[in-house]
Amino acid sequence: MLLIILAVSLLFGFVGGLASRLAGVPRLAMFLTALLTLPALLGPLLEPSPWMIGMALFLMLYVLVMQLVTAHNHDILYGKIAAEHKNMALLKVDPLTGLANRRQLRSTLQQLKTIPFSPSVCALCLDLDGFKAVNDQFGHPAGDMLLVEVGQRLQRLVREDDLVCRLGGDEFIILLFGATSSQAQSKAQSIIAELSHPVELERGQNTRVGVSVGIAITPDHTENPEELVSLADKALYLAKAEGKGTYRLAGAPAVV
Image 1: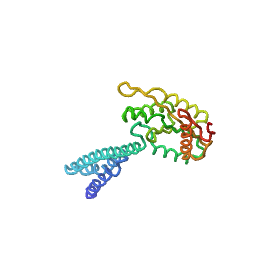
Image 2 (image 1 turned 90 degrees about the horizontal axis):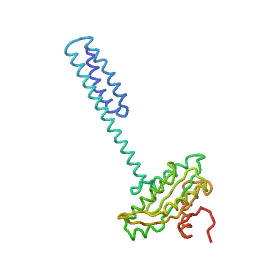
Image 3 (image 1 turned 120 degrees about the horizontal axis):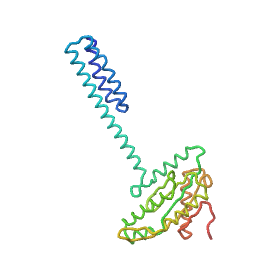
Image 4 (image 1 turned 60 degrees about the vertical axis):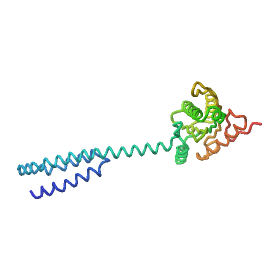
């Protein structure tokens, strides 16, 4: 009898510890706590006294409460984990357009460096032509609306696995995975054509912008994915210098 009482006392503390420590695996905690009630349930069988029956009922109630606590702790734990993941994801999203941001681009390029024999990656560096004039004429809220619309159009033009990033201002980067040089140039032409269409702003106002595109691709221009953006950016400035509304491929001879 003394051993049963001692076992019951030890179980109280053990059950409480399980409820807090095994919140990440609540089914295991609940199973073990239920299993540990068996010694106490043997008491009424060995000595069916009111005191022993009351002790067994009390322990069963205690275990039930601890199981509820375990389930509650599990919800809190995974709620915190989900919130943490959401916060980390938000750090890689441009708050205006919902596109990936510079942090996400950097992370993706670093991951590509660790993948042996990775497929070709094409970087399209974009800069809007005439965006400053829209801001000056219609104001910054209208400029923000224009950037959101541009982001949505770019997303529609690429595949789900490709990455569209807004670096800031009116600068965008697109990573095309597994694309050839001809496919990248064709995509640049599609982007230039799509962004030439009017954009409707507030109160029925319409505006137009153009876009210049610089293109670089692995392994044609570099083996280093992180250098890819720099090469595409240089090609972009050549495209803008040649009259805007066009694209340039990294390493291509300048138009005279």
